[in-house]
Length: 381
Image (cartoon, rainbow, N blue to C red):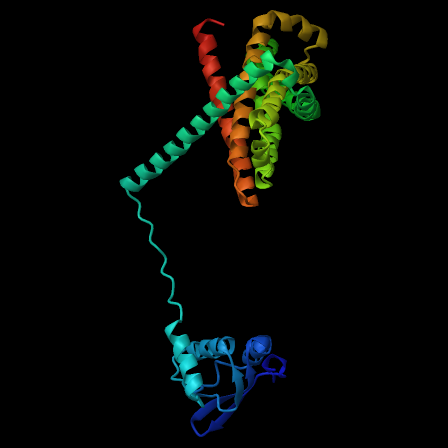
């Protein structure tokens, strides 16, 4: 049979008669000998010898792959300014090379990108449409959460307490070390930088007020929310996205189970319980770091720090920071679940939506914090 026939490795040699230089090709130029053909052609010095003829009369079998290599060599030599002819072509080979020449892909022209007001407005419109779609998806999940919570209140046995406990362990208990360490360092930096500038005016004692108010009202809760968005929000998106890729979410629909009740509600409830706890831990760690730096850098003893701290802050200061935590948790959970449900069937989609989940959550956390700051300032708190 033809596919059992032994092939001969392709070779090439130069013949020069007067001013005529001929490149003689022999052997089989087929797909199974492409590597040997490439090696044989790479050994030629294309710069010194000015070939004027490529002889194929001694060549054995030539298939489409081999013809492409010969055609590429022909084109390369002509591109260098030489006039090359193919000889030794029978009718079938002539038809093969003619067909390759006709189907030779044209050089791709780089499309010039035009910058105009219309294109800019079009991009703005597309982004606005994406934002509007995300808002509708978040409202859809929020409404679904309301319906599921109503059902759970009427039938408490449907609340998946074990799932909530597992998610609470992952989002809260597992995050305590990193949140405490980060908050400790932030508190130390605030105390050191604030003391450095306040010392120039001889009022370094007010670093206690600065650290207490800043940490309890703003820094503690917002940094905790950002850490949770990067740590737990991305995990939620990846988990739900992986279930989408494996069609487990569709399987839940098929067997008649609510995706919101099984997947989304336990995660959001656990997150709304976790962030207030983590915020309180972050506040304590920040004040500890601030107090130690004030003791070492500003000679404010721990007793003096603890005495001045209640005068600088009040119970309202702590409550203002803790009140923001559940709302930030709700925003992080909704965005994480929405992006997870948007994952397609590829790992590229999973990575893209996981990244978008973290970016959107951090952005909206900062926006929500700003809205609360304006609100509390308006009511005089």
